Length: 113
Length: 112
Image (cartoon, rainbow over all chains, first blue to last red):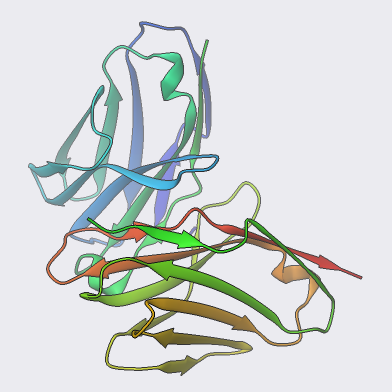
């Protein structure tokens, strides 16, 4: 997906360990989002950012934190990974917020064992 | 809040036929609607959008219909091709809400 990169693409980690996922964009978009995708639930918002150092919680934010120190990077941290956080995580960006839709990254598949 | 759902989890169509994927939403104040396509192993990709002041919008081989009376949205794909096989999501936003709410998705299977 042009302009938005997620890393790593795959990760296996142990329960109780901290994990950080990175979203990097080259579009200079103001808004960035972290979603998780699970079977039967669609895409659920974890956290989002509307500017550098400006973040807010989504509907499933418990157990996650985020940071945005630069326009281009939005980090998602699982403070102490649990098996329920096994999921596919997607980052999305938007120039002007949700009213014009999002561009999604390719996702990070995280497995917590 | 907003509840967004799709009528069928899986839709199977023959190549060349037209496909119709449906979505229902709960909030009558919803005013912006988007359809996304997600292929296996990839992130969702924007297909087409429509605002609440419209009933219909057409793109290349795709048409979105909005029925605000019954809070229903549909995506029509003309002459469905094997490359259309994917999961399709509708997403909805209401007023000044800061996020899109996504449906759970319909898997479109195209048979030869």
